[in-house]
Amino acid sequence: QIFTDAEDEIEVRVQYPRSEQSTLATLNRMQILTPKGERVALSTVVTWRTQRGFDIMRHVDGHLAVNVIGEVDKNVNNANRILVQLTESTLPQLEQKYGLVYSVEGQSARQKETLGDMKTGLLIGLAMIYIVLAWVFSSYGWPLVVMMAIPFGLIGAILGHWWMGLDMTILSLFGFFGLSGIVVNDSIILVSFYKRLREAGMAVNEALEEAAVQRVRAVLLTSLTTVAGLTPLLFETSLQAQFLIPMATAIAFGLIFSTFLILLVIPSMLSIYEQVLGFFNQSIESSRHQKKEGISEY
Image (cartoon, rainbow, N blue to C red):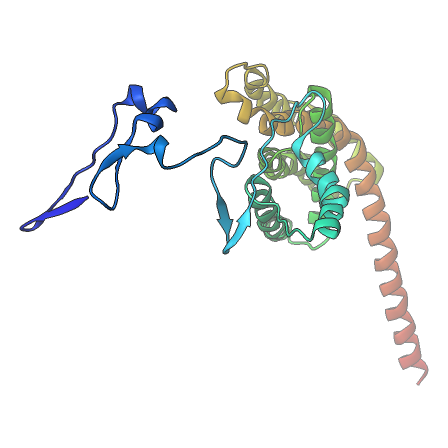
């Protein structure tokens, strides 16, 4: 009971000692006051029985709710796969049979919301990378060639998770974002050197060969120094590091995989880009020449 003393409130609580609170026998000895003013044992006026039940009643939006909690053995399954199976088969069957209403909340709901935000962030990030590259190269086509390295890095990151036996997490996706910017650096080193050789008047095939040979050391050093810095984290066994290992795995393995592909695939993409660009330039020149001939005849 709460008593008021001037401006202060005093809470008075009477309870049994903790040693007696933990035993059911205390109920038998409990004294209650009858309407006649007599004190009698609680066991003489009431009867009770024990049975299984809910230790707490939870409500969501005014409706009775039941929370189901389970630990997942990561060596056998993962939480995302279990939730997909539940939402596709088990929960719809329960809803149809018993008229239940269910929702997947907690970490799964927050993860879904985060993924939605990350899709928007991915588009913004790629757009910013393209704008910066277009400004640096003064071209709309060269940035696309440079950004071709990003999918190669993502493939390596996925293979790295499979190799390390890790599940994809939100931190893995953060690693993908960081990996995209790092992988582009390797591609810029190769493409920018090739572009300078072409501006100097060197032929396409000779410029590709020279760029791949001259820039292989710079590309390898850029990638290997980053991977070397992340290697200790990959093999860290402390609990605090377990949350960061997926992100480090995405960056390290993505760099390793993309580095070799950059030295092989990017020159091929440059060759295709030069051929397509030459074809369009030739078509434009041909149409201009035809227009000039038509004007002269007129």
